[in-house]
Length: 255
Ligand SMILES: C[S@@+](CC[C@H](N)C(=O)[O-])C[C@H]1O[C@@H](n2cnc3c(N)ncnc32)[C@H](O)[C@@H]1O
Image 1 (cartoon, protein in one colour):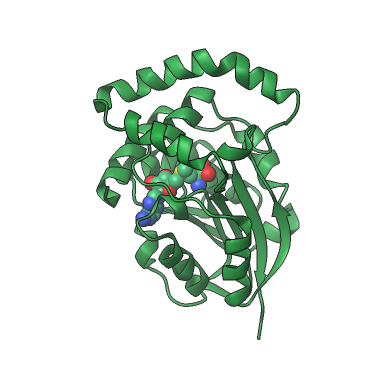
Image 2: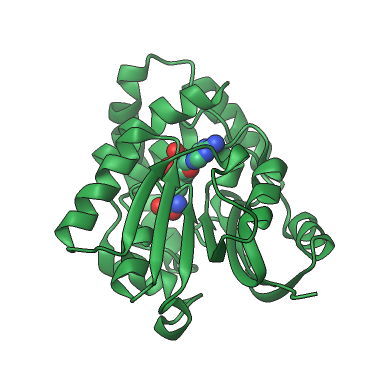
């Protein structure tokens, strides 16, 4: 599978679904408060609908750039920008594997759930590191590898062979069937990130062309090797451990 497949896929997902603003803002505030955002030059790397790009714009960022390979996603982001009348937000088409920015260009890079959809996530993370200035802040969310990862991968690789026109209807049917299990599961574990429809999560989870998984330990080693200090760790954002992102907020050391 190639990045062109990923681009086409997200052209559909992020024009069909937009996460809720307030719920997404509450989620972002788990990691950054308004004082940290104010006046900063921020990159939302793999911004999708640009929901977080726009939220950071409303929180007083100096400038937020939402970058994505999917033009459909970017047009959703631009519509949100117009809705909120933001002049500190910009959207740009680009590839995370070759970021079109200079070294140390940003104070903050927010990369929620994007590097693992590239052909080479480690290269994407090295690019993120390159464009983040020394002393800058990184937010990185990646899919977690668990004992059940292979089961999810068998399902994904089977579903992805179905005709593309079936994908949205299939996600809706699966959401309908899985709803009782999801509701039951919520008794034991709340989602850290809310404001997304179940059918949207299923579409994004089981039909995406490229997906990699990591353990938190692997990424901690990677970040520390690049000179980062881990400031916050969230072990799993979703209702199910095997279908979650883990999240690191880390500071790039000045020396
Ligand atoms: C799961 S979505 C996350 C979107 C957004 N960060 C959010 O949390 O709502 C992954 C995004 O990464 C983008 N993406 C995947 N590969 C990319 C690449 N090589 N360069 C730039 N963006 C990419 C996709 O187009 C998609 O919008």
